[in-house]
Amino acid sequence: MFQVKICGVTTKDDARLVADAGADAVGLNFVAGSPRRVTIERARELMATLPAGILRVGVFAGTPAAAILEVANDVGLDCIQLHGHLAPHPTGSPGWAWDPPETCLALAPLPVIRAVRLRDDGPAEEALAPARKWIAAAAAAGQPPAMLLVDAGVPSGQSSPASAGSLGGTGRVVDWGRLLAAGDVGLPVALAGGLTAENVAAAIRATGVQSVDTASGVEASPGRKDPARVRAFVAAAVAALGHNCPRL
Image (cartoon, rainbow, N blue to C red; front, side):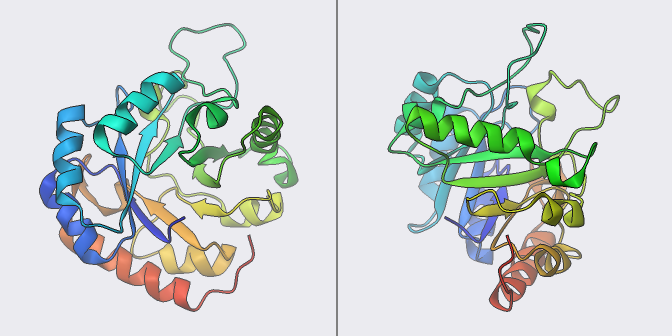
């Protein structure tokens, strides 16, 4: 679907920057509570700035499929990234943002990128077990996701696990060895989680992924991209991907 995605773009200047730097996907965040959230009006402005050929990804968490489709049609999204939890809260917390597996079918024909957080507890071989269960349920419902995006988990005590705004863009780095040990999930895998220009090539070599995604790793502040960091990240990622041998 993409090789290099820059997520959390909030301004027209940053949208032009990302495209000019050579990224082939841009992520627009519609998650309430996120410092990178954009309004519908701002999203339209950003879309008008982007050139043809760049993948336009809308990021949502816990939003009903009908509302996602309304935004997608209004703004002109090519793809949907679901970043909510993989299951409902066991005690029914009202602030818990989760995305049912049936959402993939409800969003068709728009492809879905299912963002998941790599578990950092228990056996490494089970680190993607909840994701596998969700993928299987989506397939059984009639439409699996097109890609899995692996992000780092949010540690307890750092931010509320029920806060949708804290589900990504934390800057935490995925344990690449643990990701490898988790094994194949049967989908293309994109790696996120604390990637920067300084470590993205090492991450690609260590995991063999063919796609990478960053938000906080190229920012001057939340929602504002640093031009030098964006250019350096894209250049490092593209160079590494060109010499990469797939593993995942």
